[in-house]
Amino acid sequence: MSQTVEAHKTKKRKHVAVVEETSGAGEPSTKRSKKEKDAKKHKKAKHDKGKARATDDAFRIVRASLNVSVPPVFAGDLRGGVEELLDSMLMRYIPALQGVVLAHDRLEFLDKVASIKADSPFANCRIAFDATVWSPQVGMKLSGKINLCSPDHISLLVHRTFNASIPRHHITTDSYGFEYGPAENDPEFGARQEGKAEGEAAEEGVDGGGRWVHKITGTKLGDADGSLEFTVVGLTVANQMLSLVGSIQPDPFSPEHVPKAPITTVSTVAARNLATSRPSSALQSEREVDAMIGDDDDSDMDPFGKLGKLADDAERQARAAQEAETRKEKKRKRREPKAYEDATSDAAARKKSKKKS
Image (cartoon, rainbow, N blue to C red):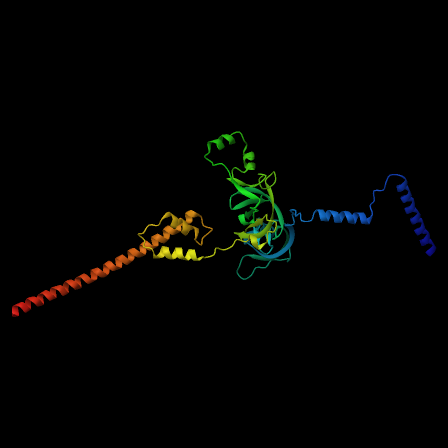
């Protein structure tokens, strides 16, 4: 038996040798050694190092199970009732699945019969199904199409469905600056847009009121088709709708990109004390108003909002002063009758004294 195995091995070695001889005699062999393959992989990994690419890892299929209460109208068709309940979950963020449900499939009843408890007409049953979920995570690289640009943020659509926003402190303002578009009532802008299609105008970003452009080259932010790759740094859920907060900074999770809270300074306190101690009738100069606006704690508020706040404070002070005046007037009116009675009593006493004398 051992002789047959050795003979088989020798035949196999001879066959390999023949193949090597034929490959060497003819065209060069296309097979590469293991060292060459490893060297190529290492070189490719080194070349792609630092280049993050957008992925579709946010889509996944989850096998989920839950208890449902089917209304009595579906007593003859429980499967149809359960499918309708599952349809109501589509395009909504489900915390248990940690994502937005896009589709469901492979519905299965875990119990053979449904139970009705007490006097409730609803049929309770346990089901299992496959849910296709869009579940982005913080740190993922995604790509979206820009649909609006403003000085404080960039709005995008991911997969033409989901909203994403990149705030100003997550935009590389060192390299890019915001460029305002033409005004809507500009006659030159209207004449320029007459010969253009709506798609071309949208691609230029003029409908959004402006765009972010490179400070040196002048190229707009994003690809030629308006798509932009960003890093997910936050998730926002409101009314079962999921929206993303993105960043295009090289290091999106650095503490430098976190907006700092305003700090109260001595000048701010002095300006507030000056405003409260001043009578309401006194007028404020333009410089004082500008200084109070500049030193206000609400640094995120626009100038018009700050002026409105100052006007509210002044109105509140005027109302307090008016109430104080009304209180003084009431006290004075209360004192007048007493003074009159005292004066009349003194006059009567003088007359009596004169008569006696």
